Image (cartoon, rainbow, N blue to C red; front, side, top):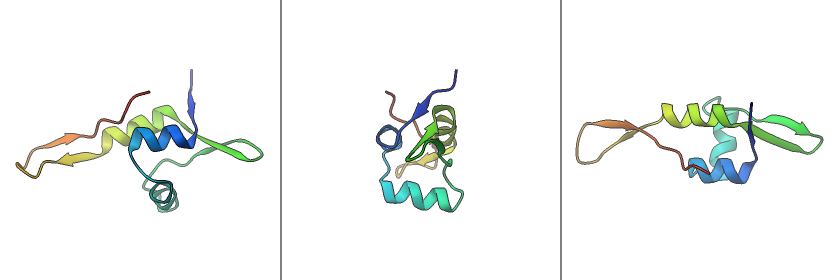
Length: 73
């Protein structure tokens, strides 16, 4: 079953601001939301999870990269 996330949850899970999210949506660097009502949008949870998994974190102390872990519920 698909679960939709509203903006506050997306922002919390990704630790990104409203401006950063919308800038990256427009640049096709972040999943686009779905229209769920006349004045409401939401993101598919699985797309946000996939985006988080695709983001590498580079440690300043080594060359090792690890995937970004998004905040959970």
